[in-house]
Length: 462
Image (tube, rainbow, N blue to C red; front, side, top):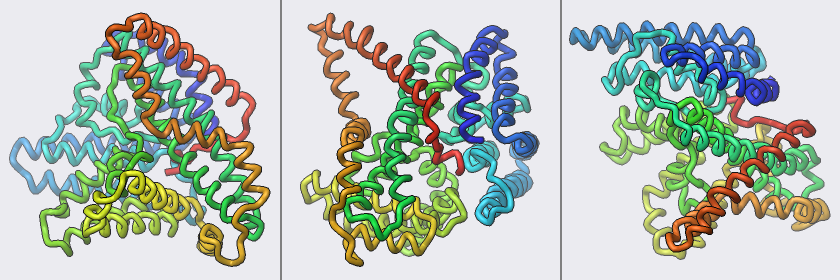
């Protein structure tokens, strides 16, 4: 179902763009709404009505909250805000639990669009954004297909002006195409191929794998989830630009972090800032006693785990980061600043990759066995033929993944094109090398999609 939605996006995107640019300005949001709902219905069928109902509830909640705030009936506005928030939290929790116990399939992207809707009503109450009086415009915002099913979480206040006054330009459109293709390449060429290693190892009997194989698999998952999610975020941001929108960045090279605190400033930025602005700060943030501050952090990270799913592994993963961040804020950050940066990076990457093991293995018994192997307990071999096979067959891909996880190529390009005295080099890079590289990535990605059966989307299920 997820894969068919993705193929649908690639096939019908030219049609959407053609219709979008053919209609008058006043009709553009209606075109986006219709195609977005069709896109969602293609993958989810009946759940599209759940989305429509969610949009209507948010629309009327926003109208009434705005009305009562204007008339200074703050208590009534607050009650409506709380009721609507409770409804969306309850809906999200219901589907997470139902999916966990296999009662119902999880609506694709439900965690993303419910958080967007909640932020809209809350921001209207806070007077941080204007109320949207056109239900179709609000519907277009909520269902906007570029970022509907896997983020980033786009708050209404960041696109309020774009909803009615955006300007499409050829430069923005070209930038959007490039960004979309780069994201597609991340997803199809890197995430899928590296992720295949993780899936193969996880399908093996743990008794047959070595310490090296276990760590290779953990690293593979770390690369897979990064390129999968950041790749889709790039595609969403690129698609947004094609339609005149500017979405905020969702990733900022998180694997170059020197601490866990820095990692969470760079990873899934839209989720981190959402919890900061709508949970952490309202609870008191860090402007309170140390005990209360840690309690506020505990709530945020428990909810972060639950946002990903109702499984114990997601909750454990969230609380794992809670503990690490408490330790860093208490004393460890000061110590880290005194050691060489290379050791700071090693510290952060070790803990981040161990965290992905907690995140990815849902069976508690298997997780314990896997961790034992990672650290050499239970008689596990240090290196085996399987590890050597994956290093030989996928070593270059891991190196490419490591390079692509850093801003090295971006800095090289900037270095080449910023030399004013070398205008010819700047022309070659900007007008030949970059465009040709982007289109090569597109062609290879399409070829892979046509012939590759392994094409999971990790964040579509959240």
